[in-house]
Length: 265
Length: 217
View 1 (tube, helix red, strand yellow):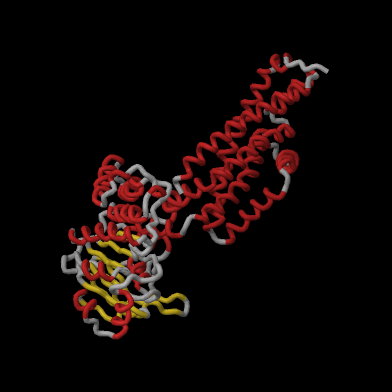
View 2 (tube, rainbow over the protein chains, first blue to last red):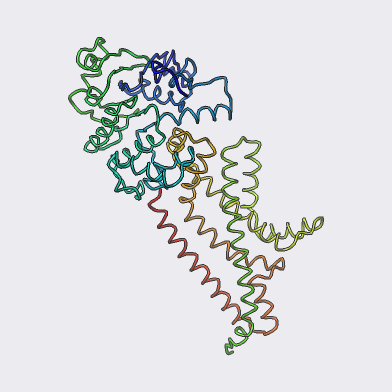
């Protein structure tokens, strides 16, 4: 799956998604160049999580096209097992990090990281272990390799989840409110890991409620509301001089003071 | 009357063969009912109604009728047309009976694994079946251990019912020894102690496994 370097890493064209009568994505266009970091912000129910989940087909879109490195992700022409084979292959190139971590509780920390490369890439136990330890080292949890997830804090769980997603050497990482379920004092350790990924030029799409983090780390910021992209710009512009009243209103509520309740996607 | 345990000692080799048969049947039935129970649970959850409803009917049938009746039905009822060896009837009858009970447990524990686990596995690139096999079923199994253990303890005691269709397990052997020695109390007390011992061992095994499972869910 190689393509010319000027092909966008992720591209969305006119993406529409309905839940019953409710249209949650009303025609989204988006281009993410390789190595770029895009933050998507917006109120609950704006469609930002649905957008992210659509990119690796956890939500099936109704209209439009999604491309990963030039290869179409959604394939309405493929049915059943043919589509499953296609999407399994596509997903190996995308790492997804969830709000509630979703670590596998029956596997040790190391096994969580090595399961996919072992079973999907046929990596032998020794090399998988080496890779797993290297990734756990990168998220600062090498000493927890043999521990089960139930013994980890929320921040530690999320760092393992990031290592697990990185183990397949993805081309792009998708973060779906990765810090929203964490206690405030645990947010920073996860942000640090994400910042390091950014410095290594990983292509990243970040759905977040952390405005300060989004402003600092991303190359481009999008504000979504009601299933549309209200405005998008450089973070410097969007967070300081937003063009739209809805964006201003949203940022007034979220910048500076902590949200009062635990946000949900 | 006086107790005299010397006939028990004399006939202990007979009892020992019965213990061997009981344990062998119990192990085969445990494997059959646990593996089969998972299979029945997976099929009844993940397939269309044409397949899953007959299976649910099967579970319901085996759970609502007596084990002894099921064995008689298989051995003497179906035996009118095809003579199935008693051991096969015993293992299959007991196996299906507990398969139904275990399937019922697995259906609940498989459904209790959160959808997030499924999504996390699929997002890594695992397919539906691989996700079931590597992620969902192991977790469902750990959660099922306490109830599975209880079922298997009851099952071991229920192997005694197989004496009714002439399988030479522990109760059947002791009845033979009693018919020769006329010492029912001594033999019944002895085999009661043997069942008790087997179950104590199983309970401690279950306890060990539950502790191991506790930090893995």
